[in-house]
Image (cartoon, rainbow over all chains, first blue to last red; front, top):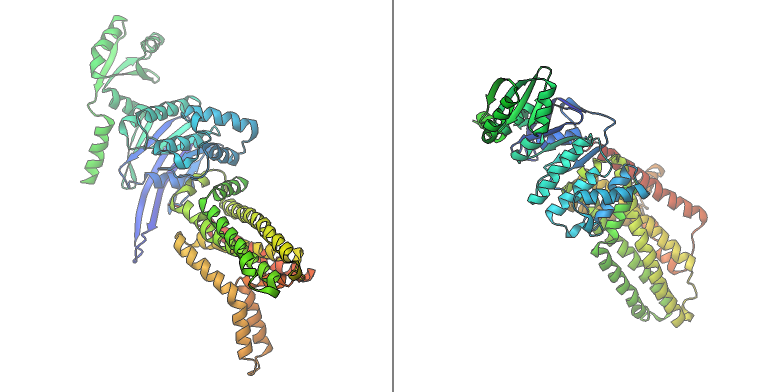
Length: 297
Length: 266
């Protein structure tokens, strides 16, 4: 869906000497269709610049970006500011109309997305009176009103209360289940850990580590049990609602420390043999700090 | 382009500044009833001049308050990222903004023309003997050319907005251009008069004449005095001045779109 290859961006500082600074130093990233991918990094790591290059707001100095031409991109900017005197309905009209949606279809989608982001009661209110969280919700509604194939959110949880964060969390999951590809930047590592299939850690303009779905599950659940891939095993894991990923011959089953004994007992009771057990005390937060701290020193 | 023009129009007409400008223009128009009476024989001419000046000044204030912030605010607040992430080309954005603000000015001119019309009807009824030369067609001719002038100024403001991100600088450059455009004819006339004895070469005179129209010659669109005398220009002149304004505007918008297409939005 999205391919970024060796992206370099150099800008001129707005000082008198007009010295040059390299913001991106060779970013490479692949976002698979239907996946949820996050870019995490410290402030100034190059997350937003990568996204802005992807959307064509800035030109790369070298390298290239490729976005599937059929994807109708929905974008939520960081700390969005919209037109004060417009109502939410008018903002959504603008968003929908620019994608060629109008009339009955627009009205149907407006009600639908407003309900999805919890803003049904605010459709005819002016954006001027919205709080930061409400503005964020309005921006999310405007980003998804056209049923995008690819959604790019820049700090979607920013400014949201716990309910708002939960809403965004569930919305991203729903978008994925609808087949939408999601790419987002966030500082909230616990959410990233639980949501994503893939995480790229960006530091000083470079992707210094990419974590797969398994890495993230292990970081989240702390323990991974490798099992032989058999239909009855899959059925049991599904029935007991356990986190797992299946490959050709092996299944990785993830549990946290608290439920390790219980899971182990369940598997042995059903005669499922465990190939091996791996453990990790590293949460995404720990991984992030160790990588960024190491590089920063 | 249409979605941009529509939201620009909606955003603009709800701005409180616009209502302030309307009230100010209305105040000036009402005051014209008082002031016109100071010029007994010329009540008609003074009233027309006063009302046309009020409309023109309101148009200028709209440019300086609404148009100046039109693009620079989008760039400053990063709203441009939201807008351009949609399938809207940068040229469509520029044209949409221009047509949006032109609709605001058109809306304002329609209201102000009606209001000034009411004032003039009252004065005409009150002092019918002094409105012998008055012509509604001449009055509307002056309003039309003033609208064209303000549209051209809007185009120039948009051009400067694409060059610089600072609204202050845009305002400074636009006001400078407006002042130059308003006075260029007088300055050229003065130079020609001063050098009349020296006998300038025909080619030099032609160059000066061309230069007069290379900068936006806003004074070309000033028909207040002619209108106050109830005079109409010939159809040929009407089309020539309209064509000058529209061609200049087209060039300015093309330049704006070209500059904006190369811009990066960090």
